[in-house]
Image (cartoon, rainbow, N blue to C red; front, top):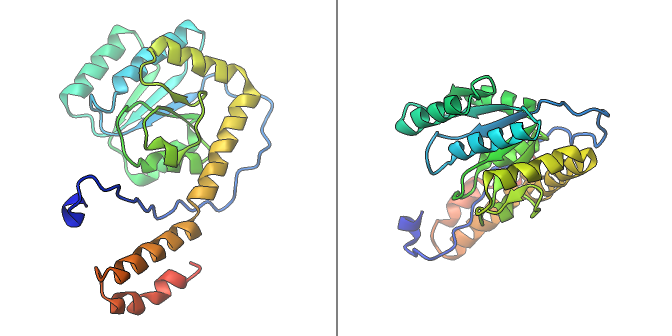
Amino acid sequence: IRDICGEMNKKIPVIYSGQDVLKAPDYVFEDDEPAEKIVLNVGTIDQRKNQRFLVDIAAEMNMLGKRWKYVVIGPDNNEEAHYLRQKISDFKLESQFHLLGEQDRTSIFTLLRQADVYFQTSKSESFVIALLEAIANDTLVLAMDYPALDEIMPQSDHTRFDQNMSAREVAAQIAELDNDVHLYREMRHQQFLHFAIQFAPELMRDRYVTLYRGLIEESAIPQSLFENNSSFFYTSE
């Protein structure tokens, strides 16, 4: 995109096609939350993605009496994946970690719905659609903080962790959140509300229209392209 616009320092807008939610989740929950939560991480196993930090957090969570399950999805035929498996073994966490490798979209959506927590371990990302998909499926998102998250999820010390925090500090905050069931549910609800306001499909459609009209005004694309496809922009579908 930078090659096309020719301005390396220009902020480039991202337009997401929208995650359709047929029905907002009821803000009514069972009295009991599962004691053994499922934590999901999606992405190529890579040092930049920082899945190794998840192993450190799991070990610290165990010390706090929270032996959760951790599911990692993504291409894993590389040196970092070998390192990750060895680290899991060294910490004796084999029974808690499940590295499923690359999965198709249907499997990922199923796991997103089943997970209790989606944990974004990477410290450097742009617009991560998987986070929105998790929130759309009413799964709580926790993440190491970075600027692009401001668009995706609300600011909160309970769900966004400073990059300088140790695994022990992060685990302590997660445990505190887990121990307060009302706070846990409120954070999940606030994330969904933010998603519904920012990323509803009709809002995404309007952003497409605005973008294309701007391109027409700048003569970047011909008016005829917009006219020939006007039904696409104005359909309720």
